[in-house]
Structure formats: C-alpha cells, structure tokens
Amino acid sequence: MKLKIITLFVIITSISLTAANHAHMIRQSKMHNMKQKNPLLFNVLAFGAKGDGLSDDSKALLAAWKSACKISGAVIEIPSELKFLIKPVTLQGPCMPNLVLQIDGIILAPAKIATWTKFSLYQWINFKWLHDFTIQGSGTADGQGYNWWDSSSHNSQIKKVKKIPSIKPTALRFYASNNITVRDISIRNSPLCHLKFDNSKGVKINNITIFSPGNSPNTDGIHLQNSQDVEIQHSNVGSGDDCVSIQTGCSNIHVHHISCSPGHGISLGGLGKGKSLACVSNIVIENITMLNTLYGTRIKTWQGGLGSVKNVSFSNIQVTDVKYPIMIDQYYCDKINQYACENQTEAVAISGVEFNQISGTYAIQPIHLACSSSFPCIDVVLDSIQLQPSKKYGALIQQQLCSNSYGKSSGLLVPESMDYCVRSGSDFIRRISRSHDVSC
Picture (spheres, rainbow, N blue to C red):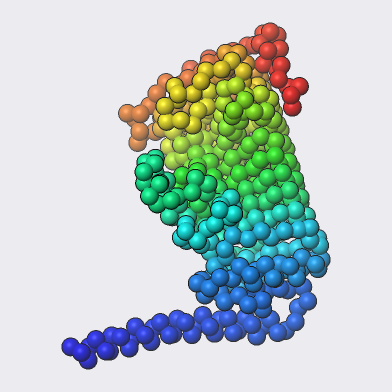
C-alpha cells in the first residue's frame, strides 16, 4: 500500500514539474526571441513579468507602458501561452501616436474581493488621456468576477458579514481618449461592465468577443457615455445585462453585425435619472441577431428627466425567443416594485425613432411603447415588422402595449394590430414633445 502511495506521489509531482518546466521553457523561449532587438517591441517579460498566473505582473506592465509611451508606433506585447496577474492599474497618456497594446496571452484580474482596495473599485484597467491607440491580439482579459456576482444578494446582513463593496469594477475603461481601436481580443467575466468609454471620440470596436453568464448582474458588454463617433461591428456579446448600452451625451453611434446572447439586448438609457439632462442623437443599430435575450431594441427613460432622444434607427434585427423585441419605456424604474417610483410630468422627449425589418419570435410581448402623456413619442416609424409568438413560451404571451406614440406604419406588420400602435400627430403634440430640444 505504501509503495502505491509513493508511486502516485511521484507521478503527481512529475506532472506538476513537467507543467512548471513547460511554462518556464515558454518564458525562456520568448525571452530569447526578445534578444533579437526590435526597438519598437516592449515585451512585459523583459520588464520582469513572470507569466505564471500567480505572481503580480502589474509593475512589469506599467514599466513596459512607461517606456513604450515615449516612442511612436511602439508595441507593448503580452505574449501568448502565458497568464499574467494584473492588479488594478491606470495606463495613462498622453503618449506618442500609434501605440499598440498587443494582448496574445491571458491577463487576469484579482479573483478575491479582499485584494481590491477602496482606490481601485471603479475599474480594473483604466486607459486615460490616450490618442491614436490600439488594443489588439488573440488573447483574453479575464475579470474573474465570480465572487462579485455570488455576493450580489439583496440580503443586507449577508453583505455586512462578507464586507462586499457597493461599488464593483469595470474591466476595461477608457476615459477622455480619442481615435481608439479595440479589435480581435476577448473580454470575459467582468465584475461589472466589460468595456466602457467615457468622454471619448473616434472609437472603433471590431471582431471582439465579450462573455459573462446570463445571471451575472449589471455586466454590460459595451457601455458608452458622453462619447461620439463610435462604430461597433462584427462582434459577439453575451452578458447579464445590456449587450450594448448607450447613455447620455452619445451621438453618431453605429452598431452593426452584432450577435447578442445572453443579455438584455441593445439599449439607449436609462436616461434622465434624478431629473438629469439626457441628450442622445443620431444612433444607427442594424444587422443584429438576438437569441433568448430579455429585450431586443429598447429606449428607456426615467420620469422627471430633461433633454431629448432623436434620430434613432433600428433595422434588420433578427430575434429568436426574445421576451420584448421592441420597447420604448418612458416610465423606466429599476426598483423591483415599479410603483415605488414617483410619478412625474417631466420627461426626456423622444422623436424620430424607426423600427424597420424586425423579425423572428417573441416570448412575452411583441411591442411595448409606453410613452409619456406629457411628452409623447413623435415621428415613430414601424416598417416591415414580422413577429410571431414563440412556441416555447405560449403561457407567457401578452397583448402588445402602445400608448402616446405618434408617427406612421408601413409594410407588412405582424401581428396586424401593430398598425394601431402609432397615431397621426397634431402640431400641438409636436410642440410639447420638442419643447426640451433647446436643453441639448
């Protein structure tokens, strides 16, 4: 019996040493390749990174960044086949133009909540004040958010015992940056939002994959606020919240050829919370597929808000078993009991919204237009919409809801009753609905 135990121990030890030796050989090989000097290449291994997934490689990344930031066209390389544990960092500019962060390996956020400090809860990797910057590669940024989701309990006693922070970090956040490209990489399992842009302009997102489970709370895929001239294309997004979230201050946004599952669809808002000013305009969402999402195309605003949403187009959207494929909700409330939200007469004005060529199956309600009686939705267009009830969810099916929406319908509409969802608006309706435009 002792001989068997010793033999098993030797085998396990041998396997562990083989794996460790393999990782060491990979690091040594990459270090050797780096000696063939490329003045534009800054590999984090050359700055002391271990790449074992356990050692803190944050300082090595910061050192590589600091050096590369000074050289036009520099590439910071996170090599493949290795894992790099990165604690919360800010990668800050201004830098020389055409800087590239090449992520081919795996970067890992700290898994234990206790290792995060009160100074790092807003984001994991913060990109700040950058211009002409690209993130690309075949690698993955893994936020390891499992503990944050498991702790998302409404029981305050559990929160108190576990000392769970009320703030959760976004995985990758850009602030005040221009001409930014993010392509090819994967972002997974963020504690909160996966990829966020604040106060940025000229953003291109192409061929990325974002994923967290459908039950991971508030894990938006791509979140935009106060950002302009953004194109998001040819990507797969799955999360526990909106696949793409467009917030106040956004204009000239083009989202196309996106697959969304799981998640809450593509949303504008919620806008106007706390009587705030919300301004969103010139949004094009097209060529989208959605599977088993909560919503499809949605605009949501809080009562009491100011400002406007205008010139929005949703077209060529394919939905499968989506609960609410088309929604405008000017009575949005994030409380479990919506009656707990105060009724107010002010509202964010909504105008010029087109739903065109939306087809597939719905699980609960084909269309939900709940517009304000004080500030009705105007110039709403329903064109060529064909939505059939899902055979899987027959017991949940409800009649459509359409109130205070004005505009026109055309093309084949299924169900046919959708033709009565929008009414011809009078000049009086137009005047009161547009009275907030001056605020934007």
